Length: 314
Image (cartoon, rainbow, N blue to C red):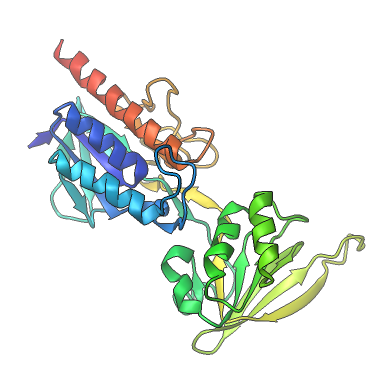
């Protein structure tokens, strides 16, 4: 069987694309490693129209239900390895033995968290080193925790931890906390949070679980040949929030990407450098990375794919 459309990615953008594809009566399917993506890591969304406040998991559940209402299949546990195009047909290789064929594709695979790439990070992953505060904050009750990253992701992680941890250190490599002021104010008011700037995390230490975070305190005014002072914090966990990388490795050499690995799209149609291949959401070079924008981009990509398919019949 050759699908009209294969949507790769099952988070906000991919699910929205699925809704629009189903309403256009396309023979489509969603392939995804897991449903929800980074939206699942957001405890509270307060800027998605129609919801004064909703959690990421709740929003994903509602989108998933809507896709299923229209009968569009979602195949989870499917990791796409590569895409090629022979003639007018796309061939998609996954971790499953059967190759999937389609007349058009939408890539909506979002982003993955960046790693610190320091000694101890890999060894203590899921033993105190975590990347999802929504998933794992409850595991750190009555513990001291470090949040790596002073952007909005880091501040939201600290906010998630307020109900559980006894002490939270937010560490930022630059000379100031860059997240929203209102989040900073809420965290300061809690009395639990301490901000540390000019801090480069160098190592994560422990026995069976995380016990210490070693960092370089880059004091200002030092001579150029002096890096700073090495310090150690006692902590039983570290939440890593130092940015994201687009999940686009599987299209390398097939689609045009920018210096950051984001898929380059036509802003009007979401079409990529290959005809019939569209992309949407945080995996693309769209300027702003927001849940509501990812949803809109998914809708736009699906409508563009429909137009493309229609043009092939005329």
